[in-house]
Image (cartoon, rainbow, N blue to C red; front, top):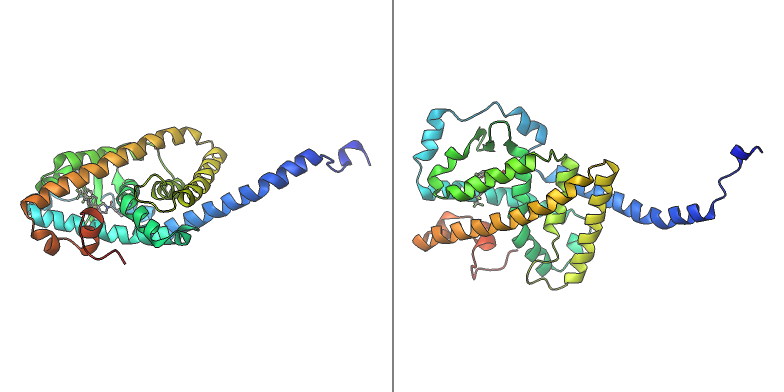
Length: 273
Ligand SMILES: O=C(O)[C@H]1CC[C@H](C(=O)N2CC[C@](c3ccc(C(F)(C(F)(F)F)C(F)(F)F)cc3)(S(=O)(=O)c3ccc(F)cc3)C2)CC1
């Protein structure tokens, strides 16, 4: 046979492929599992959210929100947040390896990461062209949330969404980024930190492989800054929630869904089932 018909006799190459292949395969499988879990557990498809961008609150509707009491506005947001978090819990449960963690560690990861995942998912329901977010059926700006009495938290949430939108993340990248955010081995009170760290690194490798293949490596460094911003957003949320509740100590139990109370206050209540 002529030289170009020689079989590729390159043991080194074959060995390298065989050695690398399983990790690429397993990382591709993990990527597929995470993207599928994300698609199945988002409340809205990104196409739906974009198709609704024209539905903006009228002046009257904004005024109606602004005349609501602080308590009612917090209650509405807490209910919508708790609703979104239930979907995040389902997302976590569908990630290969998550249910193999101890129940304690599953709860620690969800307590520490569920709001962070919601805030990342929120970039999908944010319209960067006019700085509005999808809320209770229409799009509105920061002015809708004025009666919450925490304009700094709202302003920071909108800025975060705006900056995340600027990265033009695909659904696949949102899925992988939220899985990396959730499986954070640095969360306090983890029992088996090494086991979480192994799972986290598998997802991290899958994310890096996906970004490299689509020549999106530059996004990685920007996303690591985002995780820092997420951390400060969540502590600002706890801060504002604490000062809100300090003024209304008895209201918490009646105002917020139990899950919200369990996740965001140091309640001595029964453990999250
Ligand atoms: O799964 C999907 O498709 C997505 C998931 C994410 C959903 C979403 O954007 N969200 C679900 C709940 C949302 C949400 C975000 C932030 C907060 C708070 F920070 C505070 F209340 F202080 F703002 C808290 F944490 F302190 F309470 C509560 C609730 S919301 O839609 O109610 C919303 C509220 C305020 C906004 F200024 C923008 C949005 C965000 C939209 C649907």
